[in-house]
Length: 114
Image 1 (cartoon, helix red, strand yellow):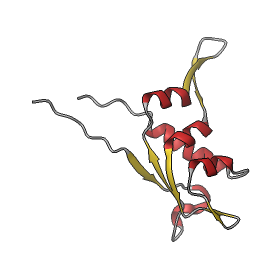
Image 2 (spheres, helix red, strand yellow):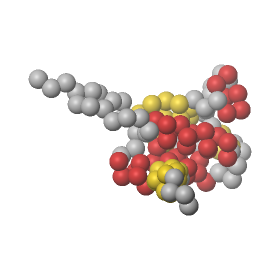
Image 3 (spheres, one colour):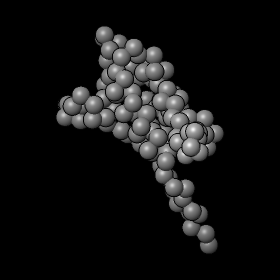
Image 4 (tube, helix red, strand yellow):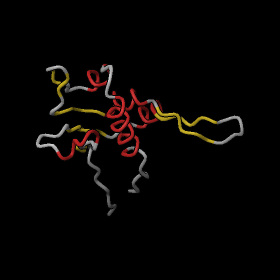
């Protein structure tokens, strides 16, 4: 009988940005694993002039595809709960980068063997 590995589809992530993890109600992101097509579109292998392989990462696309929900995040009195709202912010570059990197790391794992 074959053994199968069950993978979670979503995980919670609490960013370290701005002391967030020490707050009573930290900003919390629910992240999902990307499909193969999404992963390929968000993280592309490119080559430099010397032929070295580099990873070109699209942070906005990672956030768009990888963020399911956001909790406890208000900007100017408005709750930011979606990836679309988060991507549209004119600030918070460090937080945006941290979340995008976490999605990339989450999706950079080795494939499971069945």
